[in-house]
Image 1: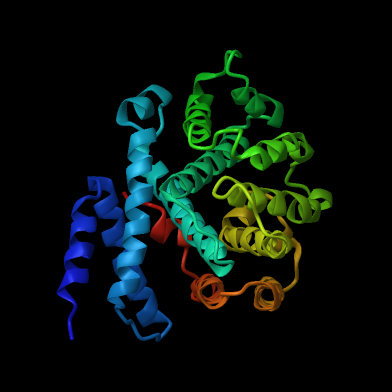
Image 2: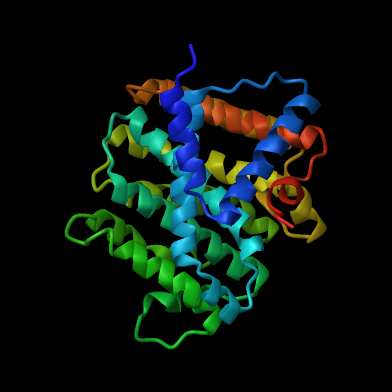
Length: 316
């Protein structure tokens, strides 16, 4: 029986999106259906799942448009249409994966936790883009945390995202997050070189995973803390696999660009995560299904030589 209540909620969420959000969602839905046909996978429309996904997307769309305003893009000389897919897609996936991680351990999280997760994803994307594409150094980027320091105009969005997020996480409640941030300089070795690619995967990926969790909840059980390293590495490897062809064209060395069989490596990491989640999480099923679906999706896209960045990250 058709649930018209859920359909109405989906429609309401869709209509609340910004113009650019509607356009992006329409294109993504169309491309996803085309992909399913290409890989001969049946397309099923699960209304409850669709409502959950579009509400998560709705939050990312709202936060993006609040933070990345048209006038700011003009001042920075940035193309908002180019920024939107990169920011919102990463924010969306981050919100889904880390929310499911907390749910796997039966941990409650509130609306500010969701907002903070999306803001952290945006600032992580902006940091990486400034480092990789605009040539800012680690030392220059860390100046954004010193609010008395004068920074280049191009870093104003990064500072704005950090300031907005910190309003949601008071130090007296989220002390462990701020303790972690004291170790940010441990990541200053970041370079795209063969001798540092594995070290980045082993140290920075788990560090970022812990930050995502500790901005959402102030206390983390030991079991969850234990699986953050393998899951953080899996997510980082998946991101590298997604960008593999573009990184190779730019001669940018990553861990996944150096392994002989990237698909075998990512499946191996997923299986390691799966085993640990099953052992440690009281409610593991949704998290594992989501991780498996993401892994399989990226692999299928690559096998059919579909350019993820061009097909899904361009609105022109």
